[in-house]
Image (cartoon, rainbow, N blue to C red; front, side, top):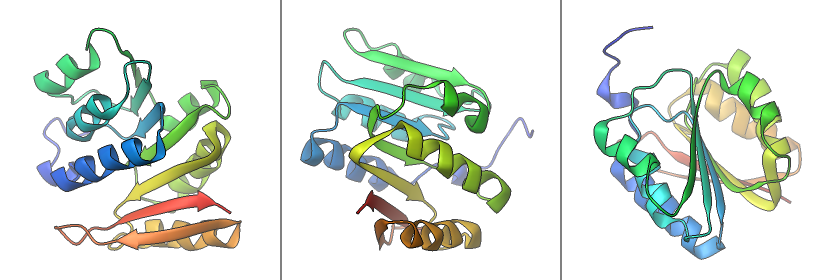
Length: 171
């Protein structure tokens, strides 16, 4: 993999702020981020969690910035960074555990469909799955349509960079 990935792999700052708001509004105490990259969104998610919350981030490579690594080591919070392929790591996580799952990993169908099926297993009943790039990435749009056929409701919001954020909730 490229040692200098493009900065546009980061989610817009507004995505982190929005997700932090979702944590507060839903009362989520367990959050999973699939596709951490530099960890900018992780910082917002970790900071939004209550003291007794749990955060886990999965990425195939560790590109986290110093600020993100500092957030991952915040005292008094339960936080894990899992280095590995999400499709292989997700089955190792506790079933029905995460109230909010944010996914911004690989964007091709061969990856996101099996990853989605694994994410479903770790999501709590009534939990939310939020996907980044739900407007401009054809396979992410395809997955959102697929999920809607399988008992999920969806809402897609635009983001400042026109990449989109889609929220899925099991009906």
